[in-house]
Length: 128
Image (cartoon, rainbow, N blue to C red; front, side, top):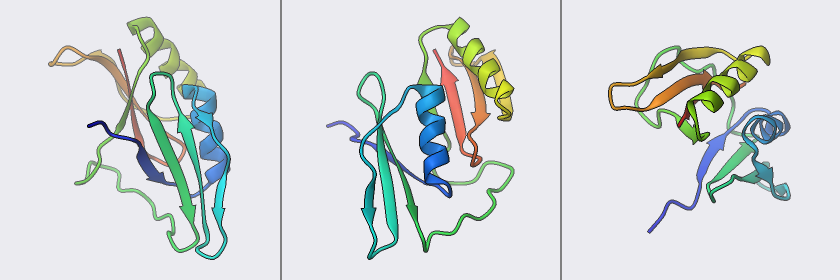
């Protein structure tokens, strides 16, 4: 068994597609639209086979995310191959105006990582 994909509700489908393609190398498939349900989505495929579905639906309104941690999914982690790559991507994301909330640092369990918020406030862990 393997996880087939992770899905994320977004407010701005096109901006988030562009973000994950530009900064994480996600290749977007064709846009799926179901006008009757007010639903649109893209599947983004990443090197190594992981897939992320970003979705927007007219009745799923975007409320502000709480500042701290809450129960539920905590973050989406991207392994980028080296500590230098973690540092470089973290700098690039900060230069693009995104907020770094932790790291880069070596964690107690041996990971080297940083945590950045995507344009809609979702936590992204960038790790080796």
